Length: 72
Image 1 (cartoon, rainbow, N blue to C red):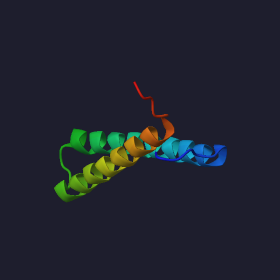
Image 2 (image 1 turned 135 degrees about the vertical axis):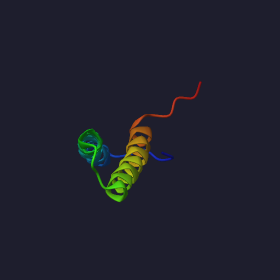
Image 3 (image 1 turned 90 degrees about the vertical axis):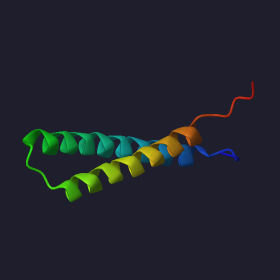
């Protein structure tokens, strides 16, 4: 990020990051369970995968925001 974050903002980002990681793991398990059953709704599976990708993007954003910039 271009500006320094306060400790409160860092804590909020870290909390959201953990929640999103948990939701991402849950979606991964749900997708795995659906495909293991064999008889699944393709539309539902596509929606779950799309949600998982959106979560991955947000997780990456938060991780980048929490990682300090190091100029080499």
